[in-house]
Amino acid sequence: MNLSTIKSKEIMPGYHGRMVHGESMTWAFWDVEKNAEVPEHYHVHEQIMHVLEGSFEFTLGGNTAIYQSGDVVIVPSNVPHSGKALTPCKLMDVFSPVREEYK
View 1 (cartoon, rainbow, N blue to C red):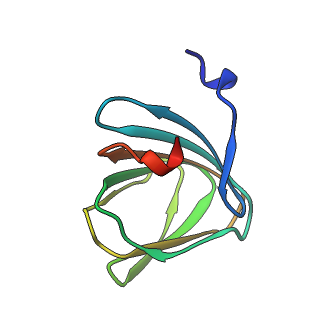
View 2 (cartoon, rainbow, N blue to C red):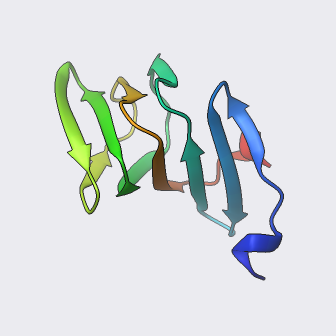
């Protein structure tokens, strides 16, 4: 498969994702609009976020930081987190197990 052939889905306002699903993980590639927010939430999935481009404000377990190109954040299962794109961003997330709701 080629990422360019995967149809983008707007999962939440301003978050446009291309998803790749394996048996036990989901790999998400996001194009995020400036000022788009993801409200605080948590999930059973372990998540690893990688900022490919832009500046992304991310709060994990009550601690807020600004992440830039090259930064990686590990989000443990069931830990509350939220975020906001301070600029247009490209993000990559890996989730385990599979995010069924993203299919």
